[in-house]
Image 1 (cartoon, helix red, strand yellow):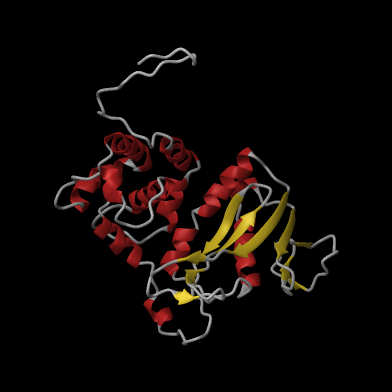
Image 2 (image 1 turned 90 degrees about the horizontal axis):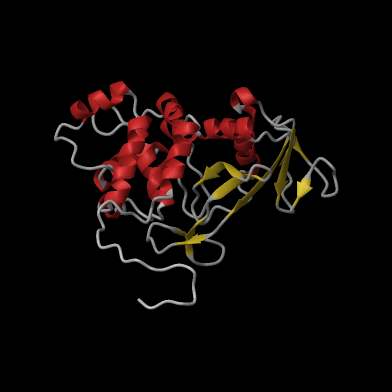
Length: 286
């Protein structure tokens, strides 16, 4: 094609073999390995059982799906058709799995392995194991409710501590300001509850470590659960991950920044509820 204004030229690539628009995922898969997250998953996550895909594969597939912009468990089918991505994922998997895990994979997948990623059915079955059916029975109509975290779900959350330790080892921070808030996410699911804005939604709550720029704690909530519900406990969950920061240690100075009107504040990660003033030097209010 005729060009004369720009200093580069276009060339048509006629072969699509091995090409992918998701090549950037390789950096995140490498970080997953470098941060020691596969080992953390093996240590804490116990949902896979003796048959089917390993927990490490499920977590790795979920990570790739989210980074690629997936919105539901059916989206792995689209990634499975991306030849370049599947080759990238297979290479990453060689380093995620131990020799024993690779050797026993044929025995675990009785029908043989024909896919790079777990099927939507396999992912749904795996995710369902983290559901706490006994807690669901405790719901009361019209009341905000947060189910207690099951043992399996607590194990799934634990590897985040390995990532925090990795960050502290490479980019140490002596101060941790925990910024905590919820976000309304509108949905059309019939099971979703109405939020204060009068539409069906979910209202996940996150604890953000401002200095490091990472989420310490995240909790999926129904739309009718207000942002201030059990705030201190959630901030304590984030502070707990700081305290368990591993060999690199936790920040010496810790503060919690909540919305105005929140009476309970967490200071220095000691689990002590304080009633602070907005102008207090030890409390940061947004």
